[in-house]
Length: 117
Length: 114
Image (cartoon, rainbow over all chains, first blue to last red; front, side, top):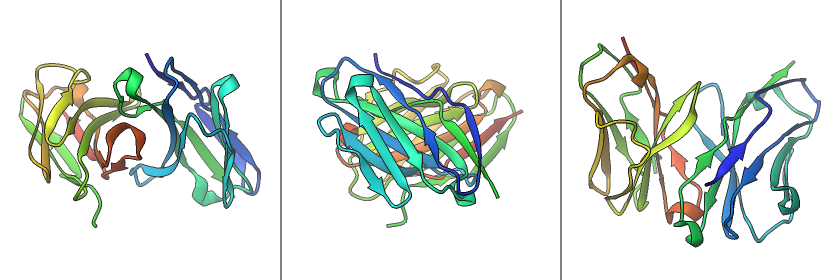
């Protein structure tokens, strides 16, 4: 069975601080994908990144960066110089590959980030 | 493309009534998913379709829930009869290829059963 754990339920930071959102996953599959989604106050889910299990390179996109470590089954998300517009709920998700029947996204419970001006 | 379109955006109904939620996926997407979001349980997958065929409905909570996809551009999620514990935000999402690509979500339907 697959599982995604986001241990941080809520985080509050002051604008311009850096913040890291943790994601730990469990899977027995060797082929899988990890995702991050953002859910702003308006409610829709916005895709941020996808990473497959064979690519452990870290990724940076503007103020966003992701650290994927298979050794610790983690896929953490860092926002540098946070802004008020970053306030949202962030979800980490996992999907498994052919060995597990190509399962759809399973989401963690989310981390609510509040950035205070 | 307008993205995944869900209707209605908000629905308030009385316990025991039938509720139908609607979804139009992105054109060309071959997978469609229905998720439910609650504070207690987070985002749960209810059912998903591939090329209009239901693949896995193990997440559907009870027989009161049913979903159909009569064609590639339309899906419904029906609850009959509705109960207060069905109150949640219901999301529809679509993707190309299913498990290994990002899913695009609609804006959700907030259902309140009183």
